[in-house]
Image (tube, rainbow, N blue to C red; front, top):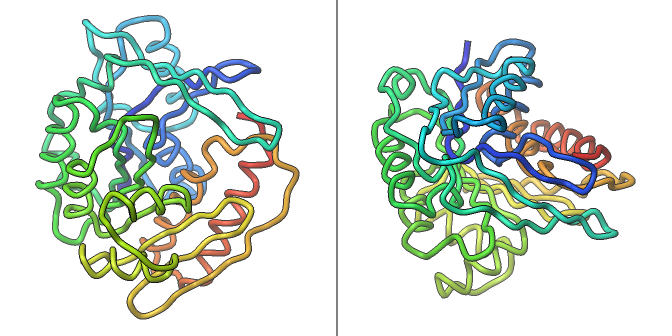
Length: 280
């Protein structure tokens, strides 16, 4: 049994047609569990409020089969919410509430750290001093061979060079989309085409794998030895919320099972296409 952890925000996405459970690390954990034929135990390490929305999260995670032993209940801060609007191309825009429970994730038991095979984390949950310290301490305690996936997820103004740099130093897999790659190039004063930028980041931070998603233009998996390019699958897009997290989960399951790069890449695109063709 492999142990996979989504570390960071868990929240309700308030979509035009109602609320959906979300947060990139939570989405990742769910998809990793769902596609693994019960060979993966998925955990969410985060915090919710002691309120009705928090209790709804607990109930839904129980229904989904995602372990919540490390989901803290915060007595002082409310459960996180994000107002999501979707344009006529299915692209989301986010308005993220501040000072919510996942901004105050408490220290996490070493028992989870010791058994982690893969951990996915991002930049958003590192917008507050409490959670950033918890996340970095968790990453610093991981066994050397643990997959540490930095799914950058740049949202609004909630990121800076220091957080990104410290995260990349602790990661061995880096997930980014094409728009975010251009922002990172500007922040780190890098130049070149997509492959050049991935190569520079991979070399600078000694990354095992770089994952670049490009919406309807496909995706790239880059390693020092091999580059896999996929054109993606054409679907009628309902909305793209969570598609990148599903893609990441499929790649991580592939890495844990030593799948060949092109094969795991195809699987990841198939899952992301399915999510894009589904509401919420």
